[in-house]
Length: 615
Image 1 (cartoon, helix red, strand yellow):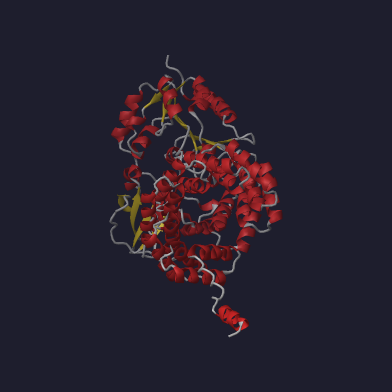
Image 2 (cartoon, rainbow, N blue to C red; image 1 turned 135 degrees about the vertical axis):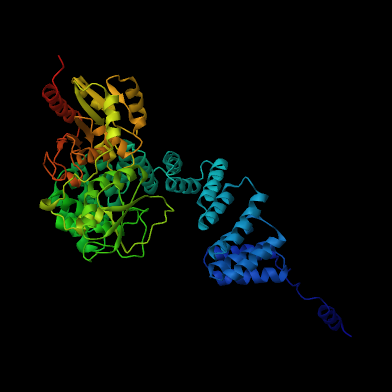
């Protein structure tokens, strides 16, 4: 064999090039992660499959397969992949992904269990507490969700999403002071966040911190000048501050940005009403009803405009829209028996008449009860306990029951809310029934009050200065006792009929010797009526005492806000509902001090002539 043959043999025996080493599962996972970040899901999946072929228990690749399945809508597969990853390594990220997937699937109990396990592993992780709060919220467990979000904030006070959710839940629970704090935390993280400004303004409004509300609304509008909602909110803030002309400017801007925005139209109509621009307000409400014929709030407001302007025929009918308002008279039962509104013959039938609004409304419209009975019907009346004894003796009332949530009513054929009786009888300004429907009061009770009040050698004046603080218009119709004090300069005996005292009034009344406070013994309206019959005049704001005194025929002087309630009509100093009533209205300044001054002058004149001093 030659040299060349020997070399050739040696060369043929050399090994070929080495195969590249296998790629690790970790490297394949990282490549898959990059593909996923670039939106190449198929390439990411292939990398994961190769990684798992190399290492079937590679936890990160298992979890990445779960993320890919989740992004492609394969939730069941995602759950399986995440569960396999967790079995290899219960990392917080895997648990979070599994919990999030289960929540998306509606498997809320399972999601809650996963986040609970994650929190046990890492209890100081604010994000996990936030996730748990989200699941609890999805379960309608708002109180528990709030605790989770608050715990997240305790761990990380700068957690904006937890603060936002806390704010919403606190606001929903009417814990507005705390809600303000939560939204302030949101704004500390993101000062230009318009939704946080809007929500904080809402809480300020409910807290009656109207200047703060206005400031937030103005800031939101600066940040979002073309947003009709921010313009509307700014207008509403001006309404709260009783700056109605300025409010209209912003409502008009909102409507220019979004014509026909019904919420803004409702607010605009309200502002026009506060300015006594009744015809313009009515036009706004009719515009809303042309757009949304079933808008109960617009119909309700228009009904009150019509009633205030004396258009009773339209107003009574339209006022029935109140039953389509979800928050109206929640205690009035939704009976299976038909409602009577005056069309059917009720002779020989039993009709249930039940209260549906306030004490004063019941007193005012109980005058219709004898008229119902006059149609040969048996009348069962349901009112609140403080009114029961007074109303039980009204002519035509067969049975008077005190309302309780579980009241078992006797059998009846039809029902009628007491506030619907004017509609049932087609009441007009000319056909208002007289007010003297109450039965004679027990003589012994009247005599007892006469004796207690003592000698009657000076004018006896009953005083009421505020109503139910929860009534929507109470801030306009009520006044503090301090505003009423100039009346005490008149030579008269003053008797407080004010049942519910606010803290400042209670303190002032305790030290004011010129007012006798006998309200502890006014156990119900019948007792109050007995006292009122012993008085020469009752001076009151627009509350149930005004209706009771005027129904009794006592001289009743009613101090009214600039926009008075619809029942007092427009521009009148008398009332067709109560011949003994006199109306003292605020002027455009919207202050009660000038009203009190006029009442003081009239009282002084009455005191000088009604009762001559004994010699």
